[in-house]
Image (cartoon, rainbow, N blue to C red; front, side, top):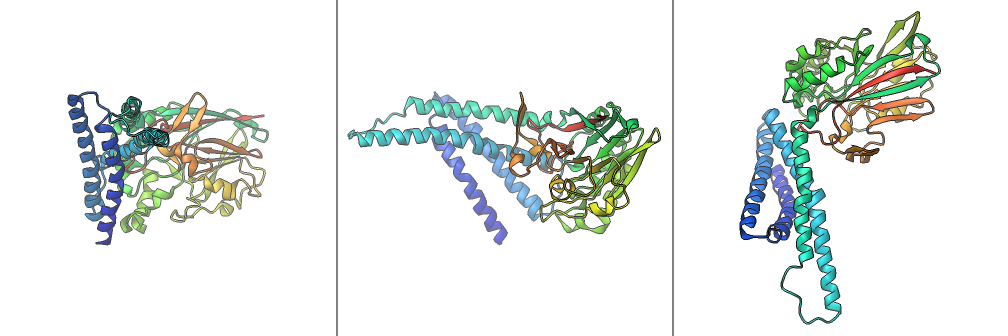
Length: 414
């Protein structure tokens, strides 16, 4: 009962911005009665889908124990899209207009005017009309992100130079992808497109840095055959991420499910390097590919990574590439370790799946949650790369501005 009351209170709080938008915009912003009627129909239809969707998701999944699927993910994505547009576009713009009106009122009151005009100021009306035009931009952008953007794979090429890279590995190519989240996809052909694009990069080794599934092992079953296209000369290796241990319900956290998830990595043509390493040999020289289980600062994520144990039997002067799902591990343990780890590959953040990367500008809400949220970072000759992710979080089935990523590293000596 308490959870239902909390849900009702939560919805009532969310309705307040809708009331503010309605009385500020719908009654004023449209130039004719016909336009107002159309505006009201669109507005209330959107609210019905949004709040009806919230109620359905709450009763079906939270209370009814229903399973998530493609359609519930799309519905939840739409709900989040509408809240984001309202809170970052409509409300701020309308508030600016109302603030202008309040200041105007105060000036007129202080000047001793006997009455205020009844008509709505034309400039304020313009601001309300502007809010509709501005809001249409993120609305259609999100629709693109929910349909095409989430399969708009980007290949990012990164060249890194190291003085102590073995000569035989000069020009060695590593392909990285991360955060597959199998249960969030709605198109096998879309996934196939991304995996084929990665295979086309002709990398020497392919590394996957965790989160094969959202929760349950069977989520990846439709894509097992697609993974078989991956074939690199030096193999395909992976580590587990926080989602691969499950944490939403007891079944996902069960030893049986966790065991099945690990088995799925093998079925997907990848060798797990959980707190382990492999020596790649070429021309009589070698480098080390290492992996640790998930280790993150967040208290509700499992801390199973054993960096000391993984490095224990590896000579200090070996060239080392580490897979560690959560980038917070790099700041906490990796970059300051006595044994130098030359390159650490992470994921986890998804770059928040929305943001702006254009003309040198790089911004995402992810930067407020993670110090290192996307791309390349370096300190004292030790590198961290945070991959933006191949898939999407459960219930957030969109990519807006921060597109799914395949990273190709070329190691150079020098």
